[in-house]
Image (cartoon, rainbow, N blue to C red; front, top):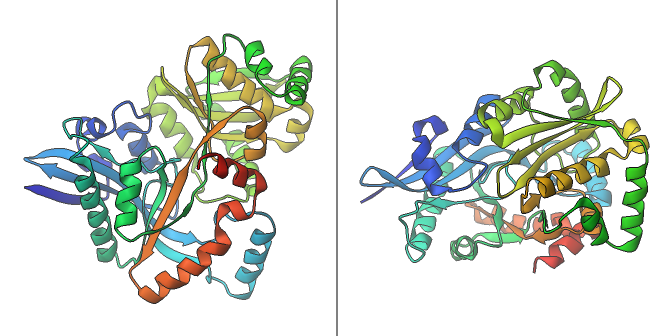
Length: 375
């Protein structure tokens, strides 16, 4: 008999049991424990498991929050929704229960290694049913799946079969590393991009330092983080200082913070997760004035590519933003789908209309091009 349970802390689940459902995943039990301990405001965490004979056979992470329907909107549409907010505060905010995580690019649902491919869809259906029940107990009508990856067709099919509506999520950019040198990577790019990057590399650059402890520079990092967040149209979560320190502490050699210095001034940092198979770019923050002079974004990009080449890491996973630049830099894109359903039929019908105006590919041509590449 299968027992379905929902917990408010990942510490209620054995580390090895959770990780058995997510083999080789960088965002594993240690990662979510570090996130939980960081105390990110306005989010409450849920951890769903299915057990058989006292053994975890399937698991998923989830969260609750008040969600702004215009989170993924940019440009003119964002200005329209901001005006609506001034006129009718709270109009676009709704209580949400979502499978996935605000600090993970994709919603992975895991099953134990003993579970066969044929058994998996039934377990995914039970996880989705558990999520709906858990949301109901919390008094939340809107259930969502944040960024179900296109490379998991079983999960997509289960969500559609359950009657959830879908719309494109933010695609994930990846760069396969099949280059013997940084120069070979540059040679794979378009002529104008290659020429521009080589010119940037010839100019004076910042000093680069890889760290696994940042306590001494954390206040400066947070100033850079806040300034970067203020310039973003895609704000969802606001990370706490403890997020950065906890990730570095609890993931040991699977996390690093890359610091960029001009003389004695910290002008940028990049939090990354890494192992022998991938390097994941979690967050890049920078001083805008220094960026113009030192090309900090592209310097960081090339530093990460060079690190992957040097350490024979075959994949650079580079996030869900800056699509125009990433198209130029040779990235490919993995599709993600956002699913949702409100238990109130009238509100569910209304959301079906709203989604026509808040689709992310309607407000950013580069994002639309990235999404079209995944279809």
